[in-house]
Image 1 (cartoon, rainbow, N blue to C red):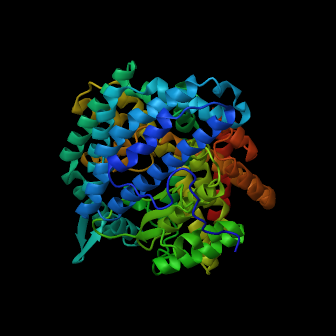
Image 2 (image 1 turned 45 degrees about the vertical axis):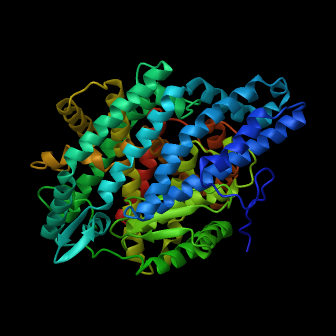
Image 3 (image 1 turned 180 degrees about the horizontal axis):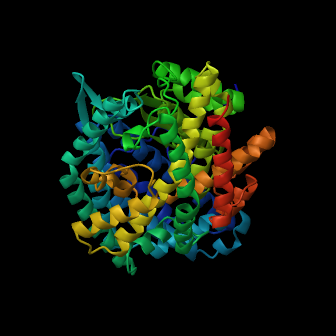
Amino acid sequence: MLVKHIVKKRLFLPQSFKITVWSKLKPYFYELRERTINSVKELETWIDNWCELNDVVAEEFRWRYIRFSCDNEDNKALESYNYAVQELTPRISPYNDALNQKLLSSAFTKKLSKKKYAIFLRSVQNSINLYREDNVSLVADIKTRAKNHGRIFSKMTIEHKDKELTLQQAQTMMETLERPEREEIYKKINARLTQDASELESTFDDLLQLRHQVAQNVGYDNFRDYKFHALERFDYKIQDCLDFHESIAKEIVPIVNELNAMRKKMMDVEVLRPWDMYCDMDGKHPNRPFKNTKELVQKSVQTLKLLHPIFGEVLELMNDIGHLDLESRKGKRPGGYNMPLPLSGVPFIFMNAANSIKDLRTIMHETGHAVHAYLIKDYRLNSDKNLPSEVAELAAMTMELLTLDYWNEFYEDEQALRRAKIWQLEKVLSTLPWVATIDKFQHWLYTNHEHSSHERTETWMRIFNEFSSSVVNKEGLENELQYMWHRQLHIFEVPFYYIEYGMAQLGAIAIWRQYKSNPQQAVANYVRALSLGYTKSIPEIYEAAGIEFNFSREYVRELGQFLKEELEKLIFEA
């Protein structure tokens, strides 16, 4: 087995040290702040010690988040997480700012290797530029309030045929053949979502004002401009995001409309409705790719190994050491994520499996993240491992597409496999307009922070209609649609972290196009790009993968047409 679990040896903190209270953690920050540095070698040792301390803190905080999200009703886990956010973070932040200042003021910093430290030092300078003591408590408050979204959604269930279903389980039932039942479940889900609309609106109002205050404290006119720098978007500008919106509206939405017109015809319905978008357009029974999460893991490991041995071994190792929580259950936070763990080097995958093809897509996506984290686990600098999302999501979304040729591990029947591939490519295509919708909406939200609730709803519906398919009839569903953005956890918890999915989706399509003509080379390029971590700029990492970091209409049209052609081959396959 190529993949092994080796816990990183500590050189600064005791191997057995665990974070409990601030008084136990503080001495290590204090020592770094007060240490005398007399040479470049001593400075590099100091940086290594600081990075190790950051890894210890990050790993502990991430485990607290994992435990809390696995069970939103575990009060002990919640208290532990809140202590980290409300008590430890406000004390750590001033020390990190002092350490940033100490580094950049050192006479030996200029003698550090530019090739090795350029991105690290750029990040440090950016942190200094954005740090304000007044924001420490505000940021802690924001993090605590933002978790209200997950708490609310974790409790949402519906009743159907005398069964209580989580929303993930109910969503899976939308794949059923019976159109009346699909409509019934769709309306039950949306009715349940609107029950908490008022509380979610209120939560967001609070977050909006707090975030605006954070931006103003740093001297920005609005949170959008502040967050652009906080996310360290050094390699592209706000205008590039606006160009992305336009390219998707002009080049991808028309393709989605064409495919939905085809769906309408194949389903032989006079009016295509939102609940018709989840079922098979051929009128076949939904294919369940696995019986339980044990089988999901087993089949996923085999699928991934066929693409590249290390890919499957990473997931296998995660399963062996208990770094997977996959099944959907009441009280569990919605959604899915991969959580890098810098000390153990083996990340954690969290998701809500409900025996659906969507779960197959999710585990491939999150394993893409996990493989990425594993490949870069030995980098010394925190900045080398703190991946920009445009690169992190490239790893995940590409894994979804590269594994397609091996989905027969889940679908032995050729026609079932064909339909699964069609579903996946439809989702790839539909992701792009939805990403543009969410990102454009957030640009408006934060550059118009004094908007009323009515203006927000009106703007949401305008942007939603701009990017949604005109072929799908939404008449009579206005009340539900006006709150659809509430589902997007990113808006509440990680604002502006979303367009990266669209940028990475374009990159994933480009790598898959490369794979179709030269599989071995494409996989090699993919691994090479991932192995760079964040030691190069985003465009350079995309270049290493053999693709472009490009949002022009011409490039988006080219990739959209390729995807459309691949979909049509599958749809009309005999």
